[in-house]
Image 1: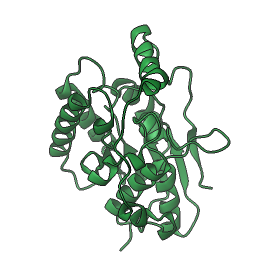
Image 2: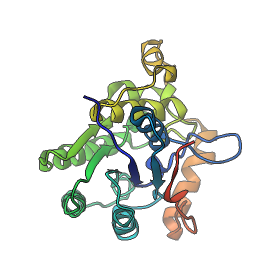
Image 3: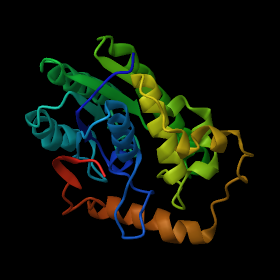
Image 4: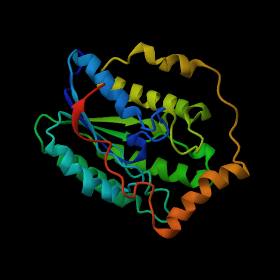
Length: 255
């Protein structure tokens, strides 16, 4: 029997906001938007969807700024991903990230009739400078978080372990954020875990069956366009999400 959800709220950072899947009008779409479409198709009636994620957010601000506003919307499903920006910092306490994630999940589960999807982000480490360190930290974080979550109302989606998503074809030019193909793949993983059919017109299986992309190379132009600006923001204490508001701060119909 297919699960039915009618009020869906997404929490997180750039991964959940949809960065890398830019539309012609400048808006970002992303996997959570695709999930909302899949949920609506399964419900056979309009549903409400909110997305509180803001790019650049570390775990602490995600919890402080997004959790209670999300619960105030009285959803029957929320999705959460966080910690990706934390593990890219020079120092990170993996145990703290795990503990705070578990606290967030437990707080959400205090709400009756609420289900939560906890996702690991896709793994970009094969294409990034210092990728080995990110791989190690990402492995530790995903393993520890998922080992700690046992409640039947929690659905785990481990995109970090999805080998298909490591192919360069799924990544945007900055190699840190997924492109439209990657976001559709993540949405397929989420819907499958929830027992919701994946719309066949997305072509997720066909893309996965195609030949792999060419080996990625980090050129001087790549460092100038993407790496140096990222370092500059870290040095000056700025974030790509400074001054940004959620793209869907309240439950709105899916279009």
